[in-house]
Image (cartoon, rainbow, N blue to C red; front, side, top):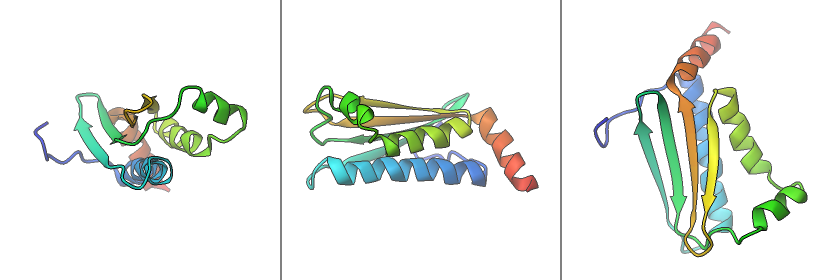
Length: 122
């Protein structure tokens, strides 16, 4: 798709994806620092909608994710993954200390259509 072209989604799927993006941006606000900037990239790929949330904060220190998981403090990450799993999608976290963090949200288009039709029948 061309830059700036819409990536249409069924309403129910759009709400879930928007909530996942909101949670990722909330993490930027809470953890990346007051001067950090964030970018959102939406890609309409042949089989998937791909949304990337990237920041230029300090990144996540090595071992910090494993530590947080061990302490049971990955609520937002689990919430994001759960929302996308319900749509047949996935979430990947990539962080390099000193270079920021990227959250990649991927949802298959076929699952979006099925989810949207199911929600409309309720």
